[in-house]
Length: 205
Image (cartoon, rainbow, N blue to C red; front, side, top):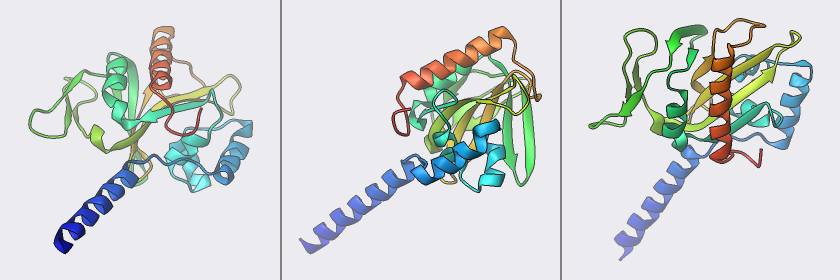
């Protein structure tokens, strides 16, 4: 009986740890105040702002004002990726101080039949094997920049272990002060609406 109780307790602790690992990172009121103070005069995407704020990118995204950021659980990856397919954009990956840009249309993909990978194949541009089960949240952001009439846009896929972006997809070309073509912008707005409809990951935003 004692062994059984120990096994049950271990299982509950393991489940609790897994649940905690899957939980999204959400800004505290104090963190939200710091983020919003920085962004009063316009700002940049979290993967840039975190250099000054020293916060996880997910926390920054969760603290942005309503209308600038909306997020949902990483479990909603299939629906969101389906909305992104065909969009002309740039996939950004930051690692070790480097920024990698993969340009081209977002390709279709499908879950592997033998692993947890989501396989995407493309002759040009983005291709590879994603791990959607390791994303805690997905954010869409449209942040007014410091250049008049500029907006920084991106769909951020949050790594549940680091709280930072596993990668980000920016609609159109990534050039300061530019606006994506109308068709690209319309698709980005549609993805944002899908994320919003799927339910907020932090608070009621």
